[in-house]
Length: 55
Ligand code: SF4
Ligand code: SF4
Image 1 (cartoon, rainbow, N blue to C red):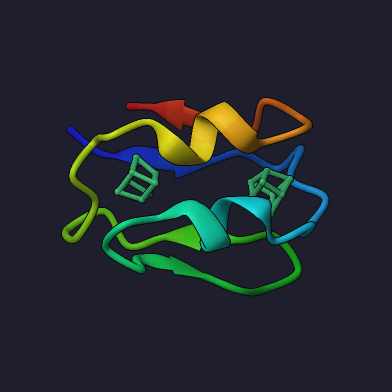
Image 2: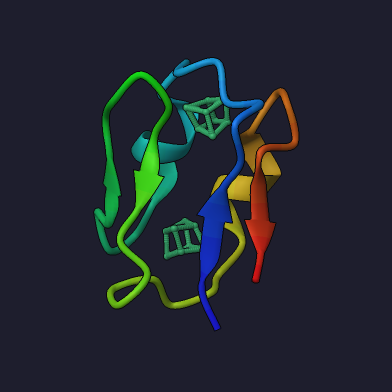
């Protein structure tokens, strides 16, 4: 299991600041490196657009 970021991301950066494993990369939309995600849900809890979703 890993979270992923959908195309509703507005690139605010809130999720990246909260990720305990630093597995979220900046971009036009942000991207989670799924092999390093520990499925903690911290990104989803701060995302203003509900773009961090469990797979
Ligand atoms: S679920 Fe946790 S580990 Fe995975 S990307 Fe979100 S904050 Fe990082
Ligand atoms: S918190 Fe949500 S909107 Fe902001 S960069 Fe992360 S996924 Fe995108």
